[in-house]
Image 1 (cartoon, helix red, strand yellow):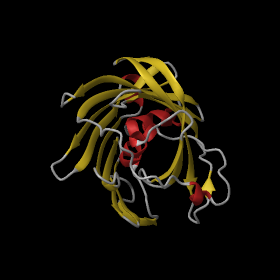
Image 2 (cartoon, one colour):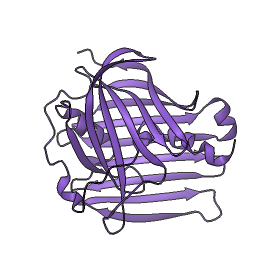
Image 3 (cartoon, one colour):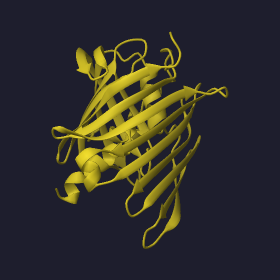
Image 4 (tube, helix red, strand yellow):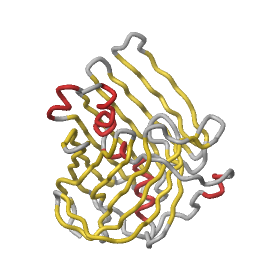
Length: 274
């Protein structure tokens, strides 16, 4: 199998949050005016939990990820995740990743995020420090022919990381047809993400059978001059979230340049009973 065909697994191994990517339909010239300005909704906050997800491509499982979501005494949400390729894919493309994100529990705005990617020849560490005016990204590469650290800033008010964006959208009513548009900085670039609630349906995953909210997710990259650019590899994604008091992510199917990659909930354990 050629290296190019393994790139979907490389993305999957980064963790659950890396699969939230696809291609956004045109929003018009002044896209910033279309952003959702609503404050966080009053839906009950997510309970502390531990969950396991599997990621796959074509007909087989390529990676696994474990996540731990908690709320600290400082009124902050914290998400810690660890992912890795498994099976045949690991023999061909060994990847181990860790992810850490801290979000203000009241405003649902990001505070910081850290991501480490370990490959056979190198390690890439990314740190994001958020303020009200944007984000500072520090990226360090080790064990390469030209190791070093690079820092860049992206100035944009009301910016989200992946965890805070999910918590924000989750907090909304999510009625059929609802649309939310937010700007997200997951690691190296900013993206305009649009979610549209398609409806309700039943879904079965390894963790059980659920009534689910079906959501369409689309994405466009934000360029250096704040112009929207189509993503070269991702087309669109469909997300299923449990239609209950928890609104747990159940499954993602992302359409990319080589086909469909997916993530699915395998196990779930809440630390606090409701």
